[in-house]
Structures are given as structure tokens and as C-alpha cells.
Length: 544
Image (cartoon, rainbow, N blue to C red; front, side, top):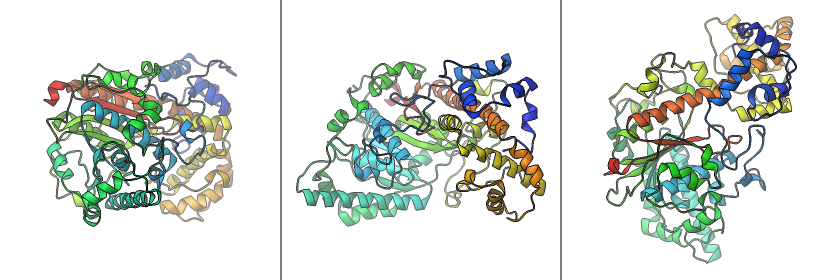
């Protein structure tokens, strides 16, 4: 974004400029970003420092390829479950696909299956889904997998949508049962309808405040039971005729239908065995772990125990959930999928841009701690130079697999990087006090001329659409589009390294607290870029 306004190209060593300046997008993909490329053909001699950076970046990142997922060079490919229909997962029944985009379908099926396995392994039926949004994962865990689920979400509008979709699902199932006249249970042990809680999880609040929040059930969620009747609703769910070989079938049928559920897990299994069981055929060798952690029955004598999960919990929310896992005796298992690293709080930036506290929460929660989202561990905190800038954390959110595809296809979308960089220089010339203002996405920007793009984008930052532009200066900047792409690719090369540091810090934090963990590339990275799930299970002595 600051390529022109801060002359970023000039900050590179001259030898790097010479090596990268004239590369085509496909060459950038092969020579710089794709670590799986075997036969690299260089148009010029690269400096050893650049080669060393590339090698180190590739070596210091967690593996991102999920078992059965695509390689880095297939950024546009879709998971096998979407081969017949790119908008409908073949692993999900239609009731769980409604209102759900393909990416989310893939995520809830994979994460839901893992959570169910962990629940079975720990003999724990209760799940708390934090940042539950419209309840897509919550519904699948509850109606599809038979778990007792509570979803907590800060946005009341999303909670309202979640309860609305719950009601629609129940009505759809009832109608299907009435048409078929054939009773078949949704799953082997039907759980209650999911409960939806309106609440903001304050990262500075203690775990007992979080537990108290979970006891406040949204009124609309209660209304479902009030209108339907709990016993009647349960009977409706039990008497439904459902499609075979889908995630709506009985739990034992689900285990046979999904490739990730071929082997049963005993309660004596450990976290180190999760990958072997969930991902057979030797793929566990690519997973990362600290140590094994024995798992035992967490629910038989402690009905209040639960599994904590967060699918793409934003910013500090993921680190907060990890702290609750370590401190709260009721949380026995956690699965954490993080995102929005730029919204993580740090000592240098305790209030990062774009992070807002809901107004309704200010009077209900008292701050009880002052930890930051990064670093979490004492070990990383003691490392010289461990700090991560906002730009570094923002860069970690980009998708390298998708960008590789754009480079190889020489996609017109690459032009948007140059457009935004030129726009930033124009904004700063007009308003020197304005830095990196949020510009909402301009649809099909790559198909527009820059003047058309600027006319649409400038009003979004409070500047006139007809602001005079210097055509000679704009054309001169447009001529550097290749360098903009090359520089952004350098940034993207380091993105997985930054993500690795953030997640490794969290694993070390758990280890310092006495809990071991495992990081699993659960989703197809070419389809869902933030695909790493951090799993931790409390050992027997911590559960007793």
C-alpha cells in the first residue's frame, strides 16, 4: 500500500532490485513463493542473501497442506467434496448447506468432525462455540452430531439470524418427515437445540465472568422451545427421514461415510494420536506437536465440563480462549482456529485499529488482567526482537495459495495492488494526516482504468470523486506494476513465518502452563487460508 508513498522499492538492496525487478508473475511464483518447485530456472544470478531469505522462510513455517488437500500451486482448486457441485459440499446434507457459503461448509464439516471425535474421546457431550456468528457450526454440532452446544456471539443481529435459521432447520426436517412417513433418527443420541448467547468475551475478564455469560440465554432461542415444546421438538427430530451417506445420518453412519472417521478413538488415546486417527494413511508425520497428552473421561463425573471451540476467532479472542482453557476447570478440550492477527493486542499497540468494544458490555465486565494477545508465553516475551508490527501481523492474514494462482495465471487482479498503492500516494498528497484509510472493495477494480477506480474509491475516504489527477505521474507509477507485485510477493513470503511465530508462541504458552498441544492443518489451505487448528486436551490429573 505504501509502495509509492514511502518509496519501498528503494529500501531493498540494489542486488535484490536487479534480481526481482524484471520478473514475470509466473517467475515470481516459481522462484520465490512456491517451496514445492523443483526445477528453478533463474534469468539472472540471485544474491545469496535473497536465496537465504527464501530458504529460511520456507523452512521456518508450519506445514499448511491438509491431508487430501491441494499443493501450493493449485490455488484455484477446490476440495474433492466440491468436485460435483462447486457450491455444495457432498459431505454435508442440504439442511446444513442452506445459507452457508462453500468455504464455510468445508470448515464446519471438518472442524465439526474433529470436535465430535474429541468429545467422544473425552466422554464430554457439551460444547461452547465462541464467536458463533449465524450459528452454522453450532447447528451442525447440535443437530448433525448430537452434541449439547452453546454459541456465544457479540453481535445481537447475528444471534437473531442464528435462532431464525435454527427454526427454519427444524421446520424443514419436520416437513421432510411428514412427506416420507419414514422415521429415522438424525443421529444416535439427539442433543437439545443449540442455545445462543449474546455476549462479548472480554479479553481482560476472568474465566468465571465468561462462565457467567454462558448462563444468559437469548430470548429468541428460548422461544423456539416455548413454541415447539421440548419433548415435542425432540420427537420431531427423532422421527425424521434423512438422506443416507450425509452428515445428517446417524453418528455411526457418519463415521463410515466420512474419510476422516474410519477409525474409532478410545478414551485412552492421546492428543498425539489425534492426527493419526483423524487423518489416516501416514499423514500424521507432517503434523506438529510438543508432547503427548493422555486423555480420560471428562464428562461422566463432571457434567459441567465442556469442549471450547472457536472457528476463526478474531484477534485477541483466540488468545483469550486459550487462557480460559488453562485457568477454567470446566474446559477440558480446546480447538482454536485463529484469524485477523493484525487485531491482536501487543504491549506496543494495546489498542490496534479496527478493534471495538460493544457498548452493551462496558458496564457488565470488570477488567481483571492485563495480558496481551501477543506474546502469550514468557519464553517468547524474553526473546530480543520478538515484537511484531501491525504491518507484519496484517501480512500474516494474506493467502499465499490464492496469490500463487493469480501469479501463474497472470491475473488482472494483480493490478489492484498497484491501484491501491497509487491511491495511497494521492490521498497522502491531499491529506498528509491520513494513513492507510479503509477503502471498501471496489467491485471489479482490475477491469477499470485507474481514473475510474479513483473516482469510485476517493469518496470512500472523504475526498471528492473529481479530485484532479496528474496523468503523467499516474502513468509513471502504473509502469511499475511489476515491481509492486514483486515487493508484495516478498511480504507474502514472510506471511506464513509470522503466523508460525504467533501460533508457536501460543503452543509454548500452553506448555508453560502444563498443557501440551498439537497444531493440525485441518482445512484445505487453497480453499480456507487460515487452516491451522490448535488442539489441546487436559491430562487426567488436571481434570480430576
